[in-house]
Image 1: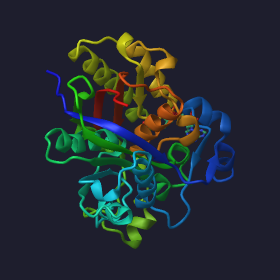
Image 2 (image 1 turned 180 degrees about the vertical axis):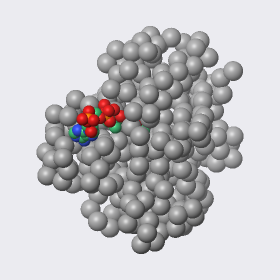
Image 3 (image 1 turned 180 degrees about the horizontal axis):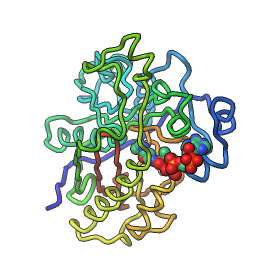
Image 4 (image 1 turned 135 degrees about the vertical axis):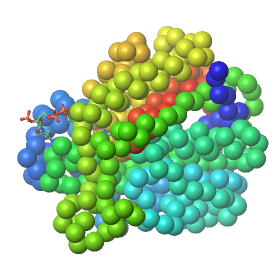
Length: 332
Ligand code: UT7
């Protein structure tokens, strides 16, 4: 049964820090080369936050833009959900920092940790409150400063990620056939060992030893994550369509998480959609974790690839493993 939420996206904005790091720049830091990175991942460059710029700064910039684009004062926002695996601090929540930066004096909020699936989780969670009628306006934000946890000595991970954020405004749907038509989310914790950051939590609090052992960086078994991502992204995407009586022909646009262009292409082959129906911007941003899907939505709007009434599918897999897909009817 489809799980409809009577909420719709009424605005979207993205923000990336201005500094760009190209593949050629990375060649100076680690044993890699532009051709390998482009061929194996599709990435040409990524944006990098300056020292002292954190996830709340990126999230605030994206949120300010989305509010300005809809002429909504920050004081009208009831709820802020921020997805991030690189929060400014362990606590307070990044959502509290964003609330204060925005002057969203009537909002409550919290952070949510679901790695690359973070934005779709945040979208569903925030939309539930709006759909239930208990909150009128909510912000769902994905924001990550992945470069803060990258080991620039590990070529298998440091070339993949970049920094970025995106925010959507959620408001009640006016009609049954607009907004969020369905969602699916899942966790498979047996995959946690393939992508994680071991240090800095309650298991391994930061110490000289955790630093010496490089536990404050991302650790990944890329091939394992790759296989899981292709399989589950394709399966969840197909499940969303079938359950709602659609085929891939009905889709106007798929906005997949941007981890690797080869993952995206393999997923779309299984789904049966051609390149024109798939949003790809990984070449400019790399994997911004919770930022990829709202940045994809933002680019799609700016490029005129989304119009009112379009059937849109968002789909992601991330560390955890976490996974999710949201099917929506674009509403503005
Ligand atoms: O959003 C969820 C988070 N992450 C992902 O979705 C990532 C999923 N995984 C991937 O995208 C891919 O597995 C990677 C891009 C991480 C790796 O691609 P791959 O095609 O699976 O490469 P590989 O790890 O099998 O390595 C192939 C070769 C190795 O050399 P040998 O052993 O064949 O001599 C690596 O040492 O490529 C080498 N290599 C590199 N060479 C140049 C690995 N990284 C690099 C590099 N530059 N940056």
